Image (cartoon, rainbow, N blue to C red; front, side, top):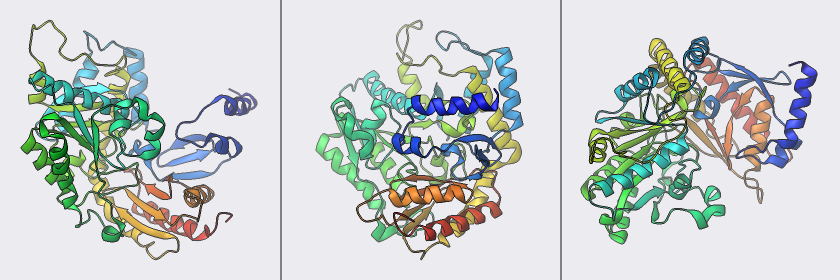
Length: 449
């Protein structure tokens, strides 16, 4: 495509493309177009080179343009570009299921593939409800989520999710029987925590309140993120997730971990469950499993849950659910390539080793005017900014735009700036990222700055 046609296509596309989770009118007046990516950096159409502070959207821990992924993708497309997942399978998908199961927490070994985190969550919810029905407890239909939780944008995900903006327009069509735990964040008790806060494990006791309110016999599952990423890196207090696990076990309630962000190394372990020392009954994944190159997600279930479904005539379908692209061979091949690189280059171990560098760099910004809180866990961190009076979210938007001019692509939600850099980052890059971000925040002193 020649440059003139390409530029014409971009201009025309701005008229027709409806961007997700974006202020479209603002974007189309101030378009920001990425032209290419390599390693830990994006390049904008105007030539600006940006450090990828959030690994794409939490999904590119290996950076961009890795030659092994490109080679494997090409080879798989030439060999088997698609195969139905209904009543048939293929070698690359089968072997990848085994590989994912081998990385999962002990006791979780049955892999059901989807294409995104949203689909993974909806699948896990259906599995939980169908599991209890198969056990003869069909009255267990309630799902307990958590305030400020993000579980994708499927109808199940927004129902159990706790982010108000994602829910308010869709209230009439949400799932019935959903309730929410309070979130664990308290600035008064947790501000500027490094790693897991020591205050707040008692927040898990609210599950006992919901059990008393609804009766345990009606509750199918509790779903939480080990790290609440999309809400702004809200870190679980020490002991909180273990207490949830104990309450769920006592009342026969399944515990679902949404590991779409934390799976495959973000917390310096294969899955967040390993880092926090808690084993869920169902675990969702997506994003980093294919380094964001080809969409893929999934749910990992225990053998006991799987076997509960395996009843009736052998030729009957046990779980009426799935997707046209479940276990897509291109995605499975890229998943293999992603894990090849992670293993060969020791990147999950590297992510854990980089954690202190991110922690020290980001917390060095404490005391900066306009910063209300800083927190971190694994290779993820967030900064809460003081909102401009009457203009919530504008300060973070200004920081985002000024960061682009200073070589950083950061993620913002409300007045929170989040970072989750690629595992291939160097300590120097993380130090530079934090220093530059601090300078940018200092420069944004008013709505017009």
